[in-house]
Image (cartoon, rainbow, N blue to C red; front, side):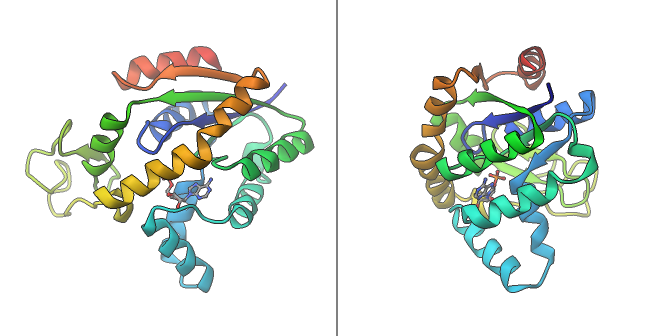
Length: 214
Ligand code: AMP
């Protein structure tokens, strides 16, 4: 049976990194609601402006809007089989909506928790910088570029610092995770669909675990 794999973890746990690897190496499409919302930045519509404002504050976009973009994205042909959701569901309502979607598509849900402790998450997020040209991710604490503030490969471009990666916004995002998303773990656990992995350590080691679970 085809699956909807969901990666659950706090912001900065590495869900996006692992989902990207699954996409690249196993051809399992990665669907990231955060990426889709960030792409809306380039649009100039009232909805895009609202989304941008909420994202910059560190809070969540409404369940209704989020479900709309998830439905639309998962109706494309590349998601006819198994796909991985990174950053969705994040609330109890979204989890219910996903059950509906899975039923309609005849798929089973498999949840994987990526666990990382709070101090490490804060460092990962507030230290994160990315190249606007190639997307390479740096971290001022653990993976600094050779020249402060600039990509090693594209020295002409100053590295981006996401508006929601500042200390204050990171606090809001982590609190939002604790309050709204963390309770979903008990729900998936209770229905026998949750596996947990340790999200600290080498990306390749973590990938091996994720790969084995799927
Ligand atoms: P992420 O890149 O996954 O950390 O997402 C960045 C931001 O996009 C979040 O802080 C939210 O504002 C928004 N977002 C992403 N996924 C969701 C979701 N499932 N529900 C509501 N808002 C979301």
